[in-house]
Every structure is written in structure tokens, then in C-alpha cells.
Image 1 (cartoon, rainbow, N blue to C red):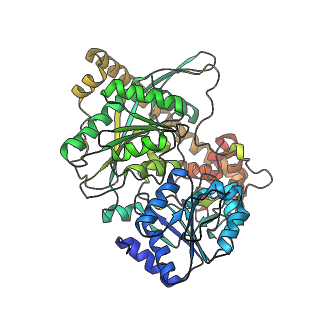
Image 2 (cartoon, rainbow, N blue to C red; image 1 turned 30 degrees about the horizontal axis):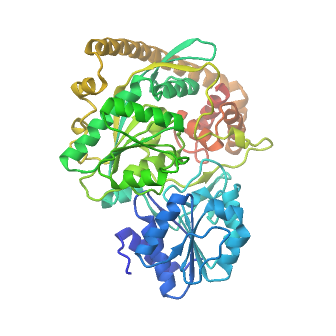
Image 3 (tube, rainbow, N blue to C red; image 1 turned 90 degrees about the horizontal axis):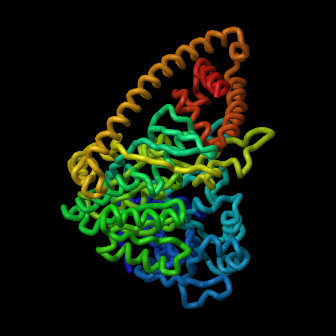
Length: 569
């Protein structure tokens, strides 16, 4: 059956045919149609007798089923064959998971090497070469006739290289992945392939007790919060018993009904990720209390998860799903258009995957909405939504490399003993658009964000109590703003003093920029270890704190300021 291709898919296929490569890395934004492109490559290679077997490697069982169905619709018979079974001779190939390959790489090597095989690596970023999945695909498929890697998020949260991907040294020992063809979010947005996204960020006051019973209060989104205080304020806001999550659910309910009632997305749906299964069940209860609508809880341990996922995708009456990592990538639910970012996972990888679930577009009138906690890391990721990102590996630290346990985690660990959320509230903050002209009238057309009457009805809150709480929050914010301004002035004075003192110190003695950069690298290693950051995250924070040219092009005065900052922190 002929494959109908979008313009970008046709361009990528033409480039692939012209290059006639052994290895190819295709990076296309979530929702752009990577599966169709890869199957078009497979069909071309089969028809031109370059291959006579196709093996697809994907992350999960659900995606394996999805691949078999997509291939079948185009006339390719791919089978689901366990490691204990032979591949039928009348099939075009098979679909397996990375876990299966890691378990028996020799078996899969035999499958690939006894035929002229195209191996398709779906979401290839999962195959880190230092991990079992990456080692498995290297052992199994290094001698395959063709290898095609595809991903919507061509980067990892660690420093492992992605298997069968080419890296280039871009200076100072930093390695960067090289894609053979890239179709980014900005391009897909321009072409109408994906939806523009409105990020509605919510601040608010969080109160919690620490492990010794001391009470703390912070404003979520306060730029002066320490990393640990921001983390606690964030976790408190996401507590199922607090007002923050109920308030945001009310806004999401109003928004999804607006999309449905206006006909913009007639069967629009809400997606709510949770950090674990217990929280997922509690979120579903809060959703039911706030909206009167029943949410579907979809978790991997549930035997009915596949059926629930199919209902969420296909049943117009199933409006909301609460999930635990089960719908992070690859799952095609075109009606999912509203996301509540209700998890503390904050790596670029997870963020891109989660937002990618609500950007699939069918017409140019559609717009996705993401309700986002006002957390600095998330705000940065939202602002960078249209930027192209590659996998970057920083040079290893000399003498004392960061261990795996010190890498930045996707999710925080268990709560410390005695930690307890006390209360939270929600205040609409900044609104970030990924298109210069909102398709539905902008912020004030987003019903649910700014309608107090709707919030009162949905949350059953007393108006007077709400007004008193708003006054208290405003008072705290004014006090903090004055404190921030005073602190900012003090920091500027301290910087000047530090730079003056530097005239007769070690900073002034270093006149070679290369030596200064080595000093910064050493200091950055200590900073990363002390703050439990990956080298990549530490460099990112340094560049945010002392902006300007990257170190390899920065003038000496900027290098001095960065070294001073690292020594002070």
C-alpha cells in the first residue's frame, strides 16, 4: 500500500535515499509522524530489494502493539515474537522491546545477520551505551545491513552515549550527537503538524513541616528560593490534599469544556501525570470531587491498563486520565489537549515527552494548554520549547568523576522522616505562548484561568476566605519583593568588592584563558558534587547565573566573574 507522506517526511525520505546510509538518525518532534516516516523507509528498502527483513525495537509492550498495527495498515507483516520463539518465515519481520534484546542479544543478532535486515530503533535515546539496553542493541545489531534510529527527544539525562549514534567534539571535550535529519517543534508548528502550546503557570503559597516539625512557608516561583526550598514548595503544591492541585484541576476542567463546547477539539481530553500509583488514585478522587467527572487511572501494574488506555484514546466520554509514566512517549491520543504538569520530574527529556502527548494536531485551529507549577526549571523548559536540542556530553571530571548515584534524578526519593505538607493555594502567574499569535484569542479566551465564579462553583470555596488569603499572599509577595531588591543591591556591591579584591589575588595571577577555563572546570566539578547536579546541569546553571559567551569564547573578565561565582557558591 502506498504511504501518504507529509512534506517533511518526503524530504527526509529523499535525503535518506540519496545518502544510502548504513546508519541514520532521524529526530522529529513528538507528534510529527516518525512512525510513518520509518515505515516508508522500510517499504522503499524492501521494494528495491535492499532488505528482506525488518526488526523494530521499541521501549514498551504497548508501543510494540502500536507498531504492529501501523505496519499492518501499510502491508508490512511484523510479528510479536517472544525470545523463546522462532520468527515465522512468512512474516516481514518482528517488533521487540529493548528489554528483550538486552536479555538475549545473541538470539537477536542471529535474526538480524541471517537476513538483509533493517533495524528500526524507536525512541533510540533509551539505548545508552553504558546501560543494559544500549549494550544489548550494540551486541545484537552492530552487523545489521541497515540501522535507522528515530526519536522525538534526541538527548538523555545522563552522560551515556546513545548506541549507534554519531557524536562530534564541539570543543573543550564536549561531545554532541549529530542527527542526519531534524524536524523540530518550531518547523512542525509553522507547518501546522503540531499544536501551539499555551503554558499557564501557577504560583501560590506552600506551607510544610520539616523533619523536626518546624513549619516553613514559601511562595512557589519566588526567584530567591534555594533549590531545596523550591523543591519542598513544589512538592507541597502537588499534595493531593492541598488547594493548589484542586484549583488547577478546576481550571483544566473549564478549559477542556471550552475546547469541546466551541468545537475546536470536540472530544478534547485532559492528561494528569502522577509521581506514583498512590498519588494517582488520590488525584483521581480530587478530580471527581472538583469536577463531578470520573477520571481513568492508568498504571502499568494494572492488568486492565491496555483497555483503559484504549478507552481513553477512543471513547469520547472518557475525558481525563491520571497516569504514572505510562503515557510519556509514543502513545497516540490526538484528543489529549490539556496537561496538568503534576509531577516533580523535571529533566528536559521527561518534560519534552510529557508535553509531546498534547501537541498532535489535526487542524490549525487547535491549541494545547499546559498548566505548569511556577518552578524555575519548568519555566526555563517551557520558554525553550521551540529550541532544537541535541544530546550533549560534558567532559569527564578529572580524578573524581560523579557517580551514578549523584546524577540528577527524574523524581525525588522518599520523603524525609517527618516531612509533611500543610497547605497550599494557587495564583495564576505568567502565561508562555509557543506562537506569536494565539489561535483562540489569547489568555483571556482561556476560560477557567481567570473566572472566579467558575472557581467558586467548582471548588466550593468561601469567597471571603479566598479574599483574605489573597491579601495575605499579596502582603508576603510585597515583603519578599522588597527583600529581593535589597538583596540584589547587596549582591551587586559584593560582586564589585570581589572583583576589586581580585586585582591582587589568584584571579589576577591567571593571565592565560586556557588556565582560567581549567580552573573553572575544576571549580564546577566541586559545585556539581556539592549541589548533586550532573556536569551538564551545573554548566547550565553557571551560564544562567553569569550569562554571556560560552567559556570557549568568553573574555577574561567574564571568566573571572564565573570563577568568583563558583568559589562563592
